[in-house]
Length: 371
Image (cartoon, rainbow, N blue to C red):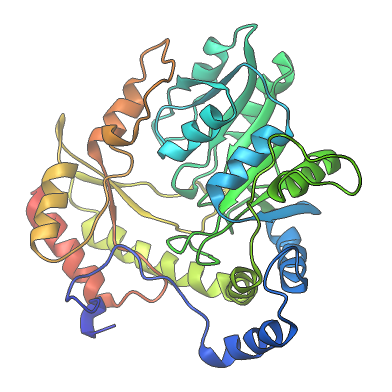
């Protein structure tokens, strides 16, 4: 990285992934190379899955090739059939995972403070065709796990969490992934902790975990025939090695992000047109994103500010603008909170060792554009 947090092109990127040093990486790499066991449930993958158990809160953890496959396989392993109520404000993969399983996504609104699935909106959409709730820990902020579990229990529904950006998040000390019937996480390079590409399913149910392990390996079991819905979703040994090393530095990455997020908040706190999503007191956040909501009165400013930053060599991202909403979903009721968020949310550059100068430059330009 060049001075001030710029990448090689002179821009401030949205994220700069942490990577292991060569000294950390080389012993694992040499072991893998010497064994020539590169994939297919190798020893490094098993070590990584074991290390994830404490972090994710369940003994059953099955790593996958990416987070989308984790979500797809979790839904398949739970043997869902029918409609699934999910968030109207999320990345397309949430809805796509349902569609790939032949399920019907039904979009519910989100609550205003953290933009997570609103239990009242969910309850209003339950029908005899509903088989599950797929909630999203939006930007790593925990959904209302108690409220959603109450609805799931009342109606006999499976409860799944799209926890893609939520590794390292805790509610009153409990991993956010230790709720519901299954959680799917992502280890994409843009996440707080990554394996370059990768994901995992964690679940309290032994049979669900075993089904995921089978499905990720072409549906092959010990003796009987292959599952017709099996696929190739295995994580290889090199990915697992990166994850094993970066899991050891997760606390350091989170601490750096927390300091950077606080700088943004302090520098922009006096600007009425800028409001940051800040975690609840009961939540230990991983600060996966620096999420700003930008409005001047009723007028959204996210597009204007994003374009201004781009002209000044700064990357930002309008998660989850209307372009992210997938086609072919049911939206029986209005979703005004999700619609408003799609217009005013802008994610600013954030990573664990982002330089203070970069934070000040970004904040100054945000203030100038949003004034």
